[in-house]
Length: 107
Length: 116
Image (cartoon, rainbow over all chains, first blue to last red; front, side, top):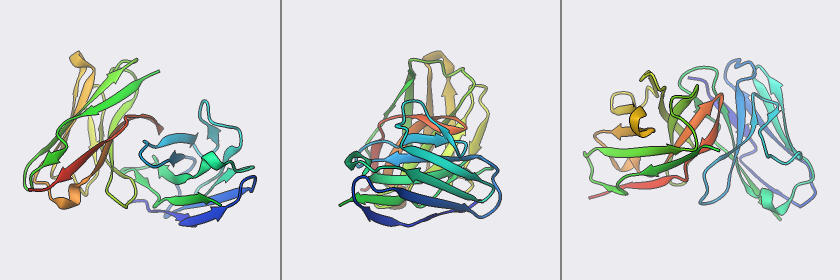
């Protein structure tokens, strides 16, 4: 099973700040890495697919990069509505797995 | 735009069977996608349970494989989850989702509590 490790687990940030969340895979997964945003009492929403492809309707301040084992989600000019937990997910091999999540708090 | 909606009992007794259905609207379950179940236990992260294709092919998480059955009902455009021998550890919000690479459409989720 491929283990995904996100860092940090928690981050408190101010609006307009730039945020970087990393996801490291226990073995190479190519570009089969996806990012989600989940707000309380809501279902997860796909932000980035295949490491760097923005999903339809997602604000341009969200971007992704990386390949192999190291991936990054970047949020430029953070907005208050971005307070949420963010997850990475790999679809390279079964069983599909998620990172443990990164909770973003807006100061 | 495809929409998914979970339905089923919110309370299941220990050792019983959890049964949920996901109705798909705005699109065909026969399309080139996999249809998955994902859960989130209270205070924990997301866990992939398994998936089915419209042909009936399935993939399961080995951690649950002995207890899980996922099936597709093309005539009603829906798919289902059965999880047997449940314990309190199976208490979670259960989501159905469409996968085409990433999970691009999700149901709203349904809380299932395992308790006597």
